[in-house]
Length: 399
Ligand SMILES: Nc1nc2c(ncn2[C@@H]2O[C@H](COP(=O)(O)OP(=O)(O)O)[C@@H](O)[C@H]2O)c(=O)[nH]1
Ligand SMILES: [Mg+2]
View 1 (tube, rainbow, N blue to C red):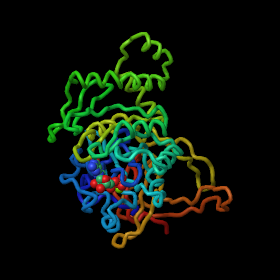
View 2: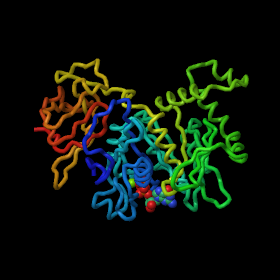
View 3: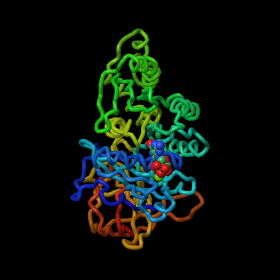
């Protein structure tokens, strides 16, 4: 159901403090149904400390699948919002349904977000539905990180799924982390190819970052070069490849900067192996979301017109600027009434503010221009500042 926000304990502090847009990340989970998105959202919320108890899809106890129908069917059918705080950043996680029937909610999530976690299960692979979802992201130039989930599944084949993803989505789908195979068959560590360290999750209470052992160093040797070459090819510094080829040890910060630029341009797609059950990869994902993903400030502004149809320029992602927001999705709740999810591009929505709700943009073949001006009132809405997406806005409606 659209307009729903994660149930109780979804991580939003009681007194909402608008954050600087640079510290916000609006991240949508995209991937075929059953790839583990809702479970991943739950695990990320728990890792960030936003919830104490990790719910299960099968028990209908997750934050983002709390609608009656979702609990009954044990699958997501609508876009849900689950915010969490990590360090100085706030991440608005949007869990989108994966079935093609609910593509409207997926598109609403893509409109609201600035970046995506594209989830593929390690026991499944890349099928037609996965390719169609990738195309949806491609069509809107959505920056994305590929999450290969369910590493602990008995039929998981990480290497095969990675190869399928690269074959389907291109050579710029490149791992930042590689799972370390263990003798028991459990994966409880990842090697970080850029920092050349190991994230060790064998102590379930905490992740340890340590130096690689010999076999782990060999894994880094095998996989680091293609990653670095992939990043350098994306760099605007054309001399970088020559310097690398001549054997120069490139500054890690320089590589990370180039990587972030390429991710934001949606021309490079880092891969992270994850297991929501054991926790492997969750800290790495949170680090990528908060430090490598673009903030709302980098989001291309939508075309804005006055009521008379004149183009408006000069707006920016500024909480103090004039209000510009998009109602991403509206739904009816039997108890609350009409609820809209709103992406705020500029300005701040305040409780009971009267807002101008513009009509349709010109669509070829549709005679409705200029848009009819309307007024609406944000009833009982929380304060939501520029960059936020999508804020649940009970009662933001036309009248
Ligand atoms: N073994 C294993 N199962 C998982 C994992 N993540 C999710 N699942 C299961 O996969 C199924 C689909 O998960 P769900 O989160 O609903 O996927 P979604 O449809 O993409 O939201 C559920 O039965 C989950 O319990 C995982 O990391 N490992
Ligand atoms: Mg789901």
